[in-house]
Image: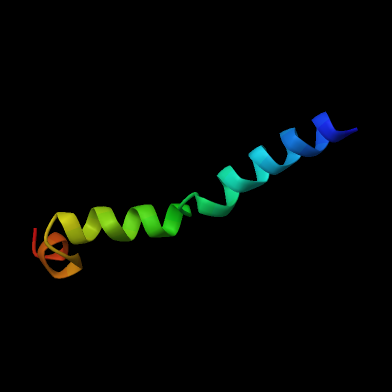
Length: 41
C-alpha cells in the first residue's frame, strides 16, 4: 500500500506544478512581442 501512495504523490506533484496550456500560450505570445504585434502582421 505505501508504494501506491508514493506513486500517487509523485504523479500528483507533477500535475500540481505543471503549467496549463493557456499559461504556455500567454508566455509564448509575450515572448513574441505581445498580441498587438501579432495582430499587426
